[in-house]
Image 1 (cartoon, rainbow, N blue to C red):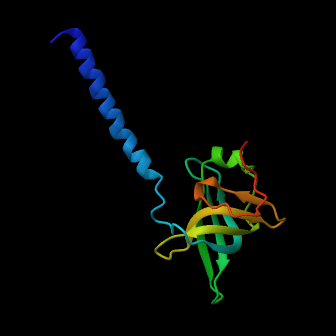
Image 2: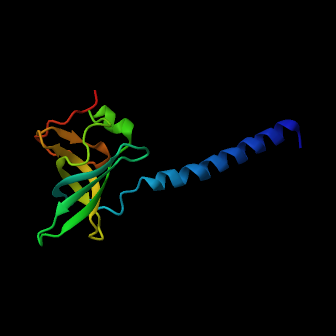
Length: 143
């Protein structure tokens, strides 16, 4: 086998190794655990806002119909995606009241993937990660 053949075989092997590493990354972004079509609206008080990658998280306390507080975890896109939509690290803070349009978790747990957050002052923050963009919102959209 020539040096050129060894190099070609090495490149092919390296390409296969890279492909094996990329496939799990694609699987990571599945929304299979969220309702595909159904959306719900929840209003609550922010307890934690984690402006982190690869996904931003907002934790809120929602008062249940039975008067018992529920802790909700709302998954969002990356800081880069959200920044292009007008979000920033100070968009909300613990104690703020927000209303969130989400695709809920299929298992009924208190959580979901974000679509739109409406802040107390009426500002709408859209999240492309959740894939929810109903008509009539004034969300910032990328150019």
